[in-house]
Length: 288
Image (cartoon, rainbow, N blue to C red; front, side):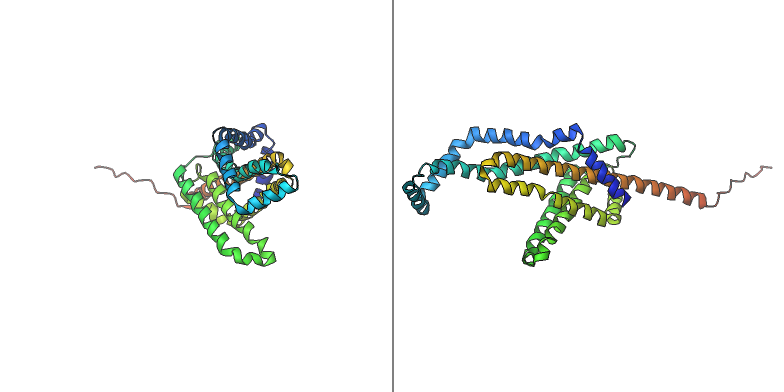
């Protein structure tokens, strides 16, 4: 419990550092640049395709005629851009968050190591490819578990329990692995996963509930379409801060646990050596 709380408050304090705040703005900057680029190259083509689909739909043609009769015929020119924006936004958000995950997680680990664990030996127990395969495999398993458990979501209490448990499992698997990839050996990583599984799982579930906060902002943006342009970047920024906090929390916890494991093993090794009987010195035979 002490390790859990200590790593929690350290992660919260690190989130107030200017460097972390600047990193948290990275997805918004990247999303803006990506949006401008896509708009410059594909906006006209996307608008033409949407207008073509709208004009070819018999149902929509009836709706336009009704709107014309109500004196709101110009609404058609407003709906088409909104369809393009709402259709492209999820793709932009996903790509932005993937870039941030690849950039921020190594930066979090390097920051914590430089300030607290510079003395910790790096045993390089996992390569970058190993980390990618581990993350993809864990994600696939989590998605399969989500699909299988969906019928149980109809039971009111379980819908608030099963999804956070699954995503909590995924969070701890991915973030704990990345935190230990450079400094722990494969055997040390397996030991820490086994000894701290419940605590790591609890951290993942808590981080999963924190990750639901941006969804409230996103939902507000859907309800209040006029504020969507402001609320969407705000939701992404909050999500990035939650991601940064979670990454820092797992990094502090896992590296502290790794240090404690090595200290414990070193002490045990010294105790075993002290308990062994002394080796008798070799006796030299006198040559006559």
